[in-house]
Image: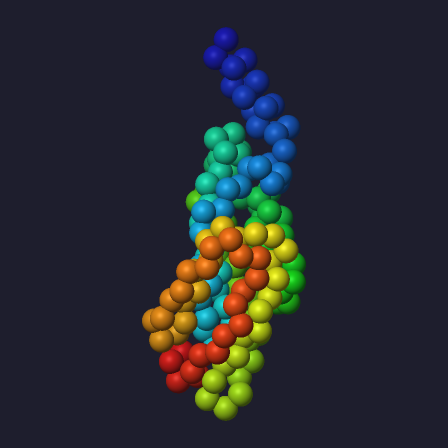
Length: 143
């Protein structure tokens, strides 16, 4: 009986639509600049069955859901995906001019409920319900 229950649970996990929009509830996205590059840290919650699936089979199946947030960015690589957080590196998202870096707004293609932008000098600002990164600049000597 116990084996039958395990088999039924495994079949349910394998057939569950893991990469659906409902399985990943993003709670916060943090954007941290490093020269011309940016590191995004995405904090999220997974549905119970999806969490079990990720624990059993790995997080590769939720990678498309993470990557979908960065369709308007070039040079994107997912460094780490876990059960509660993903880290994404984006290269050349800003450009340097003399002693300043300039970041032009980029579209996420979806609404970000909470975006925390951290500059190299320690300054941070929180944006709520946004679908773009802000236009901003920061000093090159603070990186």
